[in-house]
Length: 79
Length: 395
Image 1 (cartoon, helix red, strand yellow):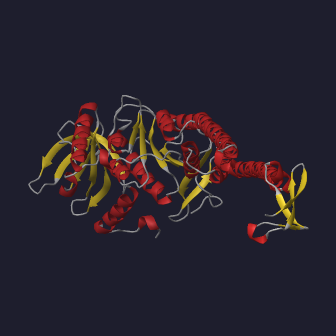
Image 2 (cartoon, rainbow over the protein chains, first blue to last red):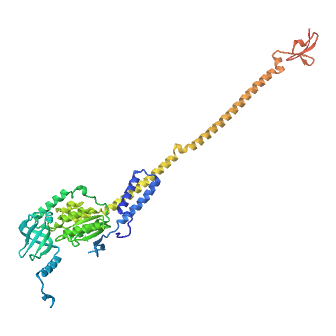
Image 3 (tube, rainbow over the protein chains, first blue to last red):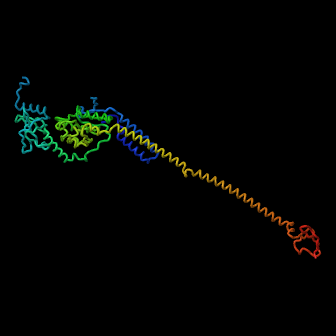
């Protein structure tokens, strides 16, 4: 029961990947070619993660039973 | 004849009353005082619930007595949950009690302690059952009253700390009749929905009675049965409920629960900025190191060998040329010397030279006589000396 468009990687997995890239670069054991690739991926991930933190309005939705036994999620207007 | 004037049998009217009452009061909560309490040898309980104005017969079957957390006594104030049943042979109605909860701090405390001991013995509070919370939940299930302070507090904290999450709310009554059942059902439904990463269940502060729903076994079981980690957030710092012991994490208040389930956005942005900085610094450093290495190689012995070899060859060539020149010169001089000595020797060999050293040349006519045997007596000869010739006759 997806609520929106299929999720790309979760924020957590993106951040984890970013952390491992930072670690590899810090370890200094990667070749220059690898480092350039990692750096590009890392910057992209960090921008992506920061972007995802941009939302400033908390979304609240209500989960309730609809007709029958189905669960239905509806938006709650600001109270 | 209309409906009301129809004559019914006692059984008919009783059946209708039974049907009507049992349908209408199939699930009720009744508060009253216990009197005429009797425990039958069968294990069933019989008593009367009463207040100032009325009384109601009550029965509790043995199978349900087992779940009682306290010993009922006459004079004790209780809330009975059950259904109204009609017993036609006697023409009376009563409450069939499913659950009996004491009212009043003393009794509540006894019930609390008893359930706590029992569930602890079952292992429901074991540390090993506690699951870690997700670091970055994207959707948070909240089970609380829609109108209570808890939801407001949670909303405020999440909006400030990490507004990019989504809250999925199941609104439930958090106190009074049936609250515990609703809370337990909400937990089950949230799990069935499944699309949240952590659940906060709780309410704002209140009296021990107000918070009682969170001390009910049905809630404890629902929390224990949740696949999704549960954070309990009931009342204030000092309030401990059974739900708190079963939950994966106990938050002292609903606000604290919100703080605990999400990271701080500002800190996280700072962290990401730091990562970016670290990556850039390391990448630049790596490039600098590599540049240095390349330059090191360029000026290294190995890399410059070809030039050196060439230089060596040139030098060797020069040397060879020099050697050659020197050899040629020496050869010339030697030849020259040889020539001079030869000249000298040649000069020594010339007839004039010989004559000068005291030798003389004997000729007969033009022929040079080199042996004595070539001359006979009376031969006329000429003897040449260095300064001239004389005539001589052989004797």
